[in-house]
Amino acid sequence: MTPSDDEPSPTRLHHVPTSHLTGDTAQSSGMRRLEAISGAMTGAARIWMGESHLDPATRSSNHHHGESETGIYVLRGHPVFVFLKGDEETRIETQPGDYVFVPPFVAHREENPSPSEEAVVILARSTQEAIVVNLSTT
Image (tube, rainbow, N blue to C red; front, top):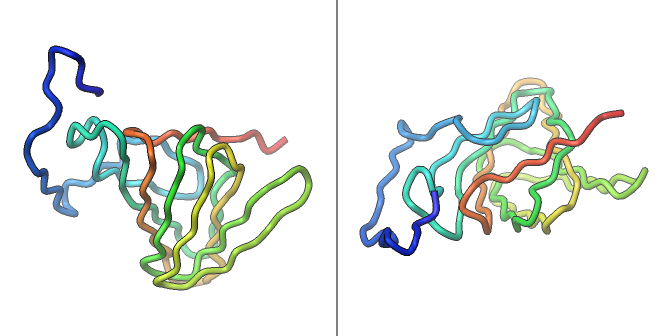
């Protein structure tokens, strides 16, 4: 939802309690994204924020985020971010407090090698909605 010329842009602060996050956003198999700040939730025009949960011993499908730049903050767990370029993979192992930057159109996936601990990251994107392009595994 983008404000049109006849709709004013938001003029007030929005509080989004954890209990109001919604999974009604773009998803990839193997992970769960929750939306907090977006055009639909708050009237944001140039940012999307939320969080992603990755169960123990799980990996997401390969995907990219189109034109969005994505900033990631590792809140809990030790997720591994795997960037794909052709047949080569680059693995980034993280811990709580780390940040990861994902440029536009860069194919990647998230993995959680822990057999018992959920991984949780905070996401910020440079577009008002969560662009997710899931890639074929074939």
